[in-house]
Image (cartoon, rainbow over all chains, first blue to last red; front, side, top):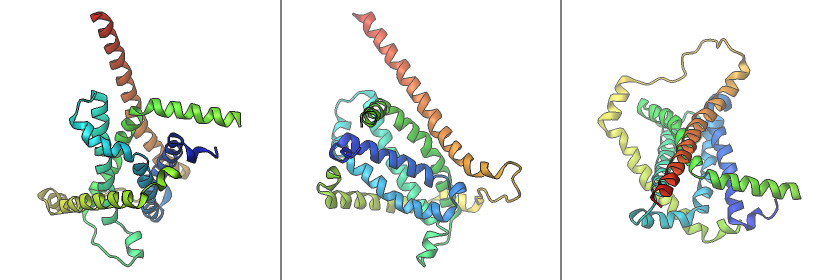
Length: 156
Length: 97
C-alpha cells in the first residue's frame, strides 16, 4: 500500500475511495447532526479539490475534445461530469446560505431563504443518482483497480 | 503525492476562481421569479417532530441506506443499459460483416 502515492491510478483510487466515503458521511445530516454536516462539508472541499486536481489533464482536454469527434459514451460522460460539478457547486452555495451552525459560529448571519433550503435539499438528493451513473461509466476502471489493489494486498 | 504537488498552487487558484465565478452566478438565482415563488410558498423539511415508531438505531442507519439506494439503483440501471447497448452494437457489427 505504501507505493500508491507514486502511481497516478492508485493515487486516484485511494483518493476516490476517501471522496465517496466522506461524501456519504456528509450527505447524512440526520445521522451525523447538522454541525458535523456543515463543518464536514467545509472539509469536503479538500477531497473534492484533490479529485479535480488528479483529473486535471482530463479537464484541460475535455473542452477541446467535446467539440471534436467523440463516441456517445464519452460525450455523455463529459456532459455528466460538468453537470456533477455544477450541482456540487449549487449544493455548496445553497448549503452555506442555509447554514445554521457553521456561519453563526463564525459570527456571520444570513437570513435563511426557503428557496435555498429547497434547492439544497432537492439537489442533494438529485446528485446521488448522477453520482451513481458517474460510477457506472467508470465501472471497468473501478473493478480493475479493486482487483489490482486487492492482489497487491494479498501478496504483501 | 507527487501528482498533486505539480504546479498545485496555480491549479488550485484556477479551480477556486472558476468555482467562485460560477457560484456568484448561481447566487443570483435568488433574484429570479422562481425563487420568489418558492419563498412565498414556503418550504419545510423534516420538521414534523413527534416520536418515530421504529428503533432509534434506524434513524442513524436509514440515511445511509437511502444514499446507497439512490446511487446504487441508477448505477445498476446504467450498467445494464451499457451492457445491452454494447451487445446490440456487437451483434449489428457481426451482421454487417
